[in-house]
Length: 469
Image 1 (cartoon, rainbow, N blue to C red):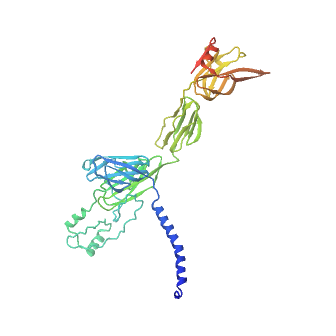
Image 2: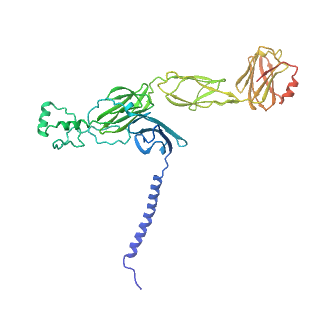
Image 3: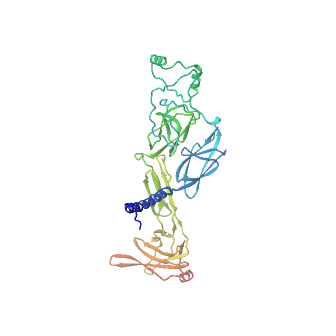
C-alpha cells in the first residue's frame, strides 16, 4: 500500500483553510463593487431645440456629444446650465438655466443669429500675460497659480518660429533688454514678428452666470456695464479675475479667476448669490377673506385674519387653516428677495361650500318683548346675522353644510354656544330664553327635534320669519 508523500497532508489542509477565508471575502468585495457601481442616481430628461439644428450641446460647459434637436437622457436632477455652440452663430439666450425633474421633460430653446451680426469683441486688459497649459473642463476655475516669469530657451533658425511660441511682455530696462538680446538670441526678422503677432487669441468665450441673475459684473476690479448672464467674446490671452455686485446679496465665491491660453477656449464662471441678512426685510401683509382664519408660514402660525410681518429672505409657503363649511385656499409660494421693495398683499380667499341644511333660531315666549336688533348668530365662528332693523319674530338660516356645527347665539350682552347636528333638507331648531337668578341673567339654549322644511314652515306660517341664506 502506497503512502502519501510526507508533508502533503498539512499543506493541503492549510490551502483549504485559506480558500475558506479568501473565497467569501472575494464574494463580498465583488458584491460591494457591484452595489457601488449600480447605485441609483436621480436623473431626468432635457429637450434641447435650436432654430438651426446641428448645434453641439453642453451641460455646465461640458460637451455632451449630442447635437440639437434632441432629448438628453440621464441628466442629473436639479438646476442645470445648458449652452449650445455652432460655428458662425451666436445663441439667444447664451445660457439656459433649467430645472430637471424625474417625472417630466425640461425644455431649453435657443435662437441662432449670425456671429458677424451679433458677436463683438470685449476689450479688457488682462491682469498679466501668462502661459498656462490648461484645458477647459467646463467647471469654474477657482484659482490658477501664476506662470513662472522665466523665459523659455528657444532655438532660432532663420525665420523659423515654433508653433508653441508664447509672447511674454518684457519689463526690463532698455539697457538690460539690449544686453539680453545680444547674449541670448539674434534679432527677430520682420516675418517672424508678423507670425508672432498672429498668435493673439480668437473666438474665446467666458460666460459669467449667477443665481439669481441680474448681478453687475466686475472684471479685474473694474465695473463693466454688463449683468449676469453675459458672455465675453474675443478676449486675448491672460489672467482675468471676475467678481459680482448686487445690492442686498453676498456673493460666493468672492472672486473667480480664469486664464485664457488658446484660441477657441470656452469657460463658464458661475456664482451663487445669497441674501444679506443685515439688509432691511420688506413688510408683508397677510390676510384672509371673507372671514378671519388662521395663517401659517412654513407651518408656523403667525396670525388670524390679518397680520403684518417682516418675512425672512428666501422661499416660503403660506397656508391657511381649515374652516368648516368653506373651501380652504390653496397654499401660496412666496420668494422674498432684497430686490422686493413693496410686496402686494397676500390674500387667502375662502369659498363657502353650499349645502341644503337649515337652522331656525326661535326666541322663547319668555323673551318679551323680542328685539331683533340685539340678536347675533354665528355658525362655526362665522357671523351670519348681526341684528336687523326691521322687526321679525324668528329667523331661518339656509344653505348650511350638513354635519355637526357650532352655533353661537348672542342677545345683547348675553351669549351661549351649542353644537347642533344638521341634516340635509331638514330644519334644526334652536330655542333660546333668558333665565334670571337674583341679579344674574343667563342665556339658555335648547335644540328641538329636526323636522322637514314643509312641516316647520306650516308650524310658523302665521309669524314674521327673517330668512337668510
